[in-house]
Image: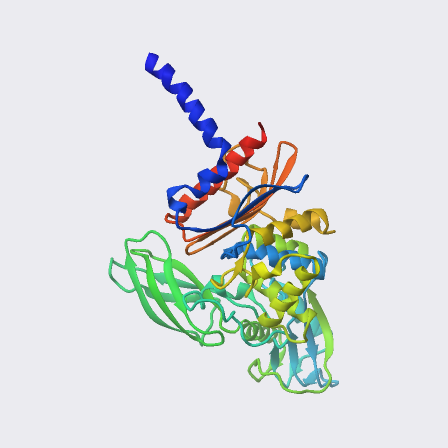
Length: 473
C-alpha cells in the first residue's frame, strides 16, 4: 500500500509535465524522429500562435488538399451554384416525328449524374420523357456524348500509375457518370489460385481484363487496376481473399460519357424511339443546336459536403477542373491550378508555400504548408460569407465521415471540425477545435514517420488532447 501511495503522486507529476509540453512530446516521439512535419496551432480569437514547428515547410498533404479546392469553389462559384448538363438536338423534326439530325448530351462537369452519393439515379426517365414531348419518334443521326467542356486528359498527369485505373482515381471528364466507377465481381478459390471474373456492373462489353490476381489468406481488398483513360484494356494485379463466392473490387470507367450515351440510347429504344446508329463521343461541327432539357446538379453546398465528409476524390477533381473555366473555355488541370493560386494570392495567402497539381490530394507531387492551410481556415472562418457552409462540410470528430473514429470517446469528441488526409507515408489533419469557449485553428502534416498510419494518428490525437487539456488550465 505504501508503494502505491508513492507511485500515484509520481505518475500525476509525470503526466502533468507531459501535458504541459504537447509539441515537444509530439515531435520527440520516436516514430516522429525522422519524419517531415509541418505544424501550426493558432487561437482564432487572439490570432496568437500557440504551437508551431516548421510551419512554413511545404509538405505532402494528401486529402487535406480538398480544403483548398472546396474553399476556392465556394468563393468563386458560390454555395448555390449548380452544374448543368444539357440535352440538345440539331437538324429538324418532320411531321412524322423523325429527327433528321443528332441528339447531344452536352456535359457540364456535373459529378452527380447517376451517382450513388446524391442526385436522381433515375434521371434518364426524365430525359426520355423530354424527347417524347419534343415529338421525336425516330432519330436518323446519333446520340453524341459531348464532353468537350473539359480537355480529354481525364486523369491528372501527376498521379501515379498504381492509382490510375482504380475507382479512387477515376479522373475528371466533361461528362461524369455513375461516379465514373464500375464493379468487377469475382469468385475466388483456394489459396494461390486465380480468381474467376464473373461480371461487370454496369455491363461494359468492350472492357477486357488481363487477370493477374491471386487468392490468398488476406482479409481485405489488395487488388489494383492498371489502365489509361479511354482505354478498354485493364490489367489487374494484387490479392483478394480466398474462397469467396462473390467478391467485388472497383475500377474506373474508361469513357463515362460514351457509357451514358449508350444507356440513354437503350432507354429511348425501350420506349419506342428508333435509333439505328451507334452512340459516339466524336463531336464534329454541326448546324446550330437547340436545347430541349437542362439537368441541374444539387447545389455546390451539398456537393462539397460529400467531398469533404467522405473525402470523395471524384467530386473533388470534377470541381477542381471546373474552376479552370474562370480562366479559359476548356477546363484543364493546368488552368485550374492557376485559378486556385491566383485567388488565394489575391487574399494575401503565402502561395509560395502551395504546390497543388490536383484537387483531391492524390498526387504525391502536391505540397502545402501548415501555415497556408491555417491561413485559409482563418479566412474561411472570419472573412468568407460562406463560413457556415464550409465548416458544415467538414467531418466531426467521433461522429461523421472520415473522422468517425478520430478522437472518439475522448473529451474532444464532437468538438473538432477537420479534414483528414491519408496516402502511403502521409497522415494529415487540418481544421477547427471548439473547446472551452475558444476556437483553435490547426494544421498537422506528417510525412514518412517511422510507424503505421494508425500509430501516427494516435500521436496526433494525443497532441490535440494535451493541447485541449492545457487550454482548460
